[in-house]
Length: 132
Length: 277
Image (cartoon, each protein chain N blue to C red):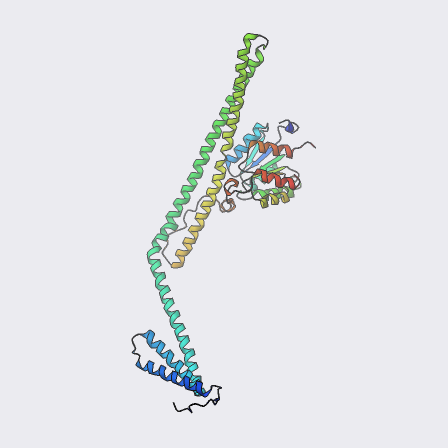
């Protein structure tokens, strides 16, 4: 946990998944790590609109969603002048190597496959917010 | 049967005299046989006709009679085409009859399936998704409340630990008990968390259900196409599609990582590592 101490606890996070169960789980785990300033979106399009209007510092997103998939949201974020530097963590059931490669090429910050553990999420957060 | 016997002089078409004699005898025997056949069925009579033409052809070749050869060949061509046409005709008639039977027997069943049957199936699948969603949320709600209790419990135990002087021997049993409570409290928080994380089955199973609903809807559409092709009367077969949006259904994944035996997080981490993460 000390590896995340330098990350501001009020960092605004957007959790994107079309299943409310999954959003809640991610939100809870983030809460346990000390992050409770969390908003949710149920598809990529809603997420992108929120991102453009809010001051988010971190995105956790699923891959398969209606209206706009996670991979397309990632591309849209990386293409936007104001959003392109945002850390983007993919949390998805898509576990084929091709998916990981595609996400990496699109600029993902890290990748978790479902089902996942709280430890994994913490590890990835530490990697993403590594003190430079 | 009046050719020169015994000579091997070649005729105009290159057949040796002896060969011509053989052919001629053969043709003769064939014609005799055909003359004796009774017309018992159209099959036999048509093959008889064919043999007659073949006999003419052979004779024409043997006698160097180009006219006979020519007319025999033309008849053969016609005959084979006629046979072909008649076979195609028979097949078409059989196919038509089969399709009519199919339409008569299965038509009503297809209609039922495409109409109410599939709709029922998708409704049931959706209700399963709803039920598991509600159940998962209920459990998570309870784990939230448990977590609150556990934190309060932890605070109480810590209060005891911090309030009693460990140098006083009488306090030691109480301090040990408080430490024990803290240890178990930590274990309980762990289990509570595990229960929370276990709810992700709902997401994974929901994605499978969506795939099945999509499949079922596709089957329904194919059935409807079939029914329309057969010209069966159909009353609003496609009324009331499932509530899942087409995009959501199309983008549902095949299977979750666990079931399909695809990569686990360690494999993924290895790949990420090799990509410089």
